[in-house]
Image 1 (cartoon, rainbow, N blue to C red):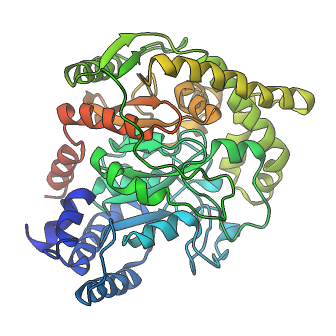
Image 2: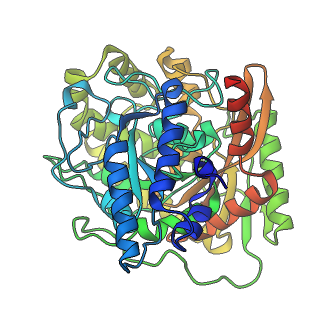
Amino acid sequence: MAKNDLWRLSATELTALTRAGDVRAEDAVQASIDRMKAVNPALNAVVEDLSGEALERACALDKARANGAQPGPLHGVPVTIKINVDQKGHATSNGVTALKDLIAPADAPVVENLHKAGAVVIGRTNTPEFSFRADTDNPLFGRTHNPWGRHISPGGSSGGAGAAVMAGIGALAHGNDIGGSLRFPAAANGAVTVKPGLGRVPAWNPSQTAERGLLAQLMSVQGLITRAAEDLHLSMPSLIAADPRDPFHVPMPWRGAALDGPIKVAFTKNPHGYELHPEVEAALDFSRDALADAGYAVEEAEPPNVFDAGRTGYRALMGEIYALMKQDVDAAGSQTVRDIFAVYFQEFPPFAGQELLQMMAKRTHYARQWSLFLEDYPLVLSPFLPQPFFRPDRDTEGAEGVHEVLGCAVYSYAMNFLGLPAASVPARLAELPGGPQPINVQIAARRWREDLAVDACAAIEARAGRMCLPLWEKMQAASA
């Protein structure tokens, strides 16, 4: 493969070359930088170009390897970091103009773990204001566009990450997820991700001046967005390395024990009162068949209380946000984000006072029900959204827009409230009136068994193919 085509490789394919010494880290990083310079101006996915320090680090890695150092598992892999996580010497702006000069004094654990594994950060990716929209736009850096076209939102809040990795800007993209912020961009762009369960990936920002609310601590996790399921198996073991700055991190291996017999998968199409689009149903049927043919025992079975758990969890989170975050949004947010938050509070009426405490306590009830269900069915295949991904700025269109964007996403934020792993994988490329767009499905898993969810993603991907390939053909045709 020519040097300038190295950006096309998955992280797994690339590390097979860099670790063996067949490809220099410098060449791998340069190829991704060249791709970034070619396609990012039209996407605005990367909002801070770190090409200079990335090449310096890549050269240092090559030199160390030549001197006998053992290459890390992600040796020379170009990655991006979302702008709401601390990277030493760079602003953790979170898409907020008032925070544009908040310079991180040290790396967050996820950044440090990626560095230790040999990855090279080539840029920092865009997020909406306060990282609290399922779309990506802000007054500080502007809008991120979906590489499939401007008929689709890039998702949020890790929209820059999803657009970047699918466009070929880095093999791995860091993101985070409090209600779907890894899975929304994966679904929007046709990428693969797994929202880790609670306690899996150490998290903390050295720049923060106060601790986050309890529900934010319980529902928010760090993760990666990739173009191929195999890259999650490659990279997540490095990301979950322990860090004492997160006192609630659980030091468990990535791979759990093998399960006896065919793994049972509960299969549901239940849209919980929302209309299920034919393309989403087709993606679900395709995924069911792919898993069955791969040896899984797929059965129609209804998991407990998805709608109730999801809505309760998000209303509780809104109660915490109203009490702890609304003042900051009002003071530093744009009129657009203030208006969106006002509609959030209508769509998800915040619990308060004693009722908030009761609903937080009820989290254990829902989690116990799911724990018992997952004893019988270690995996759950379901829709992620009942409809194909929405258009940009849909959430600015009042109650109806927010209802389409977040109201129907109960399979998303229910998993955050429960603290369970949930993966997203593309299963279909739909030809819709606005243009082509990927359709992803969700696979939830037992606690601590992200590896099972990723295995299932790989089985679906093996039949559906990697969505980046038709995307790159489309991008090339558009630029010709």
